[in-house]
Image 1 (cartoon, rainbow, N blue to C red):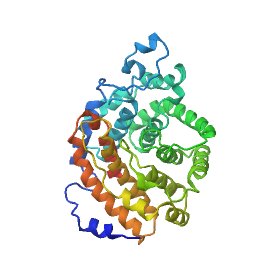
Image 2 (image 1 turned 90 degrees about the horizontal axis):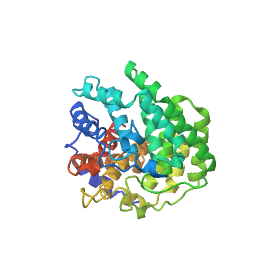
Image 3 (image 1 turned 120 degrees about the vertical axis):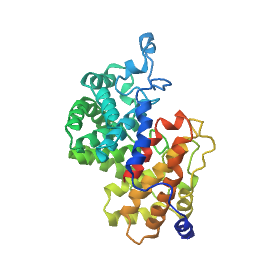
Image 4 (image 1 turned 135 degrees about the vertical axis):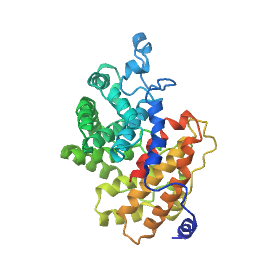
Length: 353
């Protein structure tokens, strides 16, 4: 394999943006979800209209906790981001605003209504499957691990919705015959990464075992993944890297190294370390590619940790993730609402690993 890219990346200067999140960066990024969480319109509900009464409901009537940020999943991971920043920077200057937003959203009545949505509306059992589900479990996971009295209250309040999502996901796993390998919301591997994290945090061994079993069924025998064809034009996830990230979590280091060696060919590795080209950040679909840069970075970070210390691909991924973060994060603020309503969460997650 030709690893000249390692030399090229090593020569680049990574000075524009810290690779670990600073409080100054946290304040700048936090302003985006603080704005969009309470912004109801524009809105893409994803709601299946069953009758005239459904059609007349506003986003905040359908989803009283997570109605802003253009869509449900972006609102959920905007809330996760604020919890994460409050946890990491308890004295952050925006503390009062963050607490007010979280306290307003995570109220007993509003969360019960969110949980009831999955029961009271036809076809709602597939709503936000599995991308939004994954971020909801990430929010719950973060609250559980946050040793703070407010976080404990929010975590308790969130349980009706969390338990409903877990119930839906466990049922879905029993009948999911094929994985979804897309680079957008339904990607199976991405969702299972966050679900696995949650199951392990909560010591839910039944859910964990089901995730591991299904992951192995889907991906253990995958070889020569066609990552040389990535990305599609609106991807914000890498189909191949999401799979590798998941497998790095369920296999031992020795098992993963062997599996990974057969998973990527030279041309695929050389392709996924190329920076995605974003031609128009005002286009709500094309700007997804900024998210792809960030999610590739976090996947490469995780995968690199699972590879042997002197492994050439580990070195390549470590360097590439640094370059991707440097290039992508300033662009979060150079577009419009199409990127601003969600990209900050991706940046915070990538920087937190």
